[in-house]
Image (tube, rainbow, N blue to C red; front, side):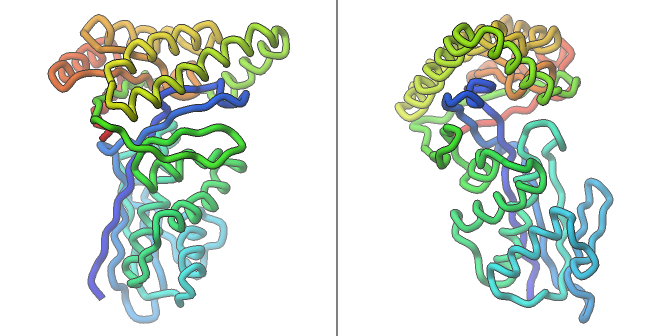
Length: 309
């Protein structure tokens, strides 16, 4: 058999952080400029399936590994296909930062499952692929939302309301984003807990903020589906103002957001839990490099350019 490769993108939250926990919608989009890639090639006879995660210098034998997420992913794929364990090697590489809210775990799993099923000449349909990735996501997150696996497997924007199936939708026109990494980890558990404590103290005030954020998410989806993507800029600015009122921003995030807007970004906001982590900026093709330079000069540890199309 010949070698087979498959890739899957990262993802980022565009609108709706925190409010999504309280019943409001959220939007997430793929980051195609970041990719996880799995390559399956024939291995020595009798060796079974060997998985090599090159970025973390980890080698696993499927026969000898039970709980590791990569082994679980391979085993679920074989079970789904009713296929015996092949004598093969899977090499995995990824440009998606780990534990950064960019969908690394889901992308690596999707690439592995897709490559292995294609190697065995039984490629999975996208809904089946997404369902398998979701099962592995449970190992990472316990009770995942379903957003990461859906965005990563379909490679399209996703509209999500907690308790409902994520909805995939298609942009009518491409738009350009920059992701700026503050270099400071995002303490998501802490920021989510702080918002919950505030909501418990002042439920009416917090519910009003959540509802405003939900309205912005619905407007953003309509803008993306109609191709009026410049409308996203002001919506980002409004969403960031509401996130400030929830007290989940940080000096590092604010510095990058201010730098992006000063350099001509159409909008900018934090993405994810806040307190650190990443921010995003809406840019044009003409000013993307200028804004990226401004983010770097403002202290961004990493700047990622991507187009949602």
